[in-house]
Structure formats: C-alpha cells, structure tokens
Length: 72
Image (tube, rainbow, N blue to C red; front, side):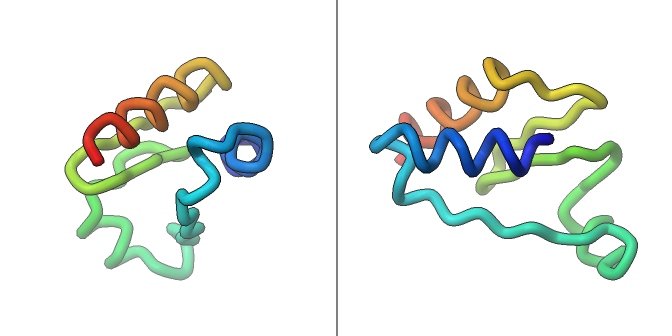
C-alpha cells in the first residue's frame, strides 16, 4: 500500500517527481533492515528522517515527503 501511494504521489505531483524510491525486502536483506533501524513495516526512510507504522495513510506519507523536500 505504501509503495503504491508513493508511486502515485511521485507520478501526480511534480514536486515529488525527482524522488528515487528503493524497495528493500526485509526477509532477504535482514542485516540491511537492522542497520537501517527497521522495527516495523512499512518503513520509509530518507537520511535521518523516517516514518513507520502499521497503517501509513496517504496524508502521512505526503506530509513525510513534504518534510523531505523542505530539508533539501
């Protein structure tokens, strides 16, 4: 669900069009997941910012992306 929302926001919103999305499978990359601090999925990370939760709404994801863009 989070991946779908990210793709839609990136496609429909020009200010997010430059974002690169990397999907990391926690099952096949457990050491990477631990290193990145993943405690719950879905888990979004950009630099030191992160967002996680059982349910990530479109509104929460969009707010997170706006925060990322404001930091750049």
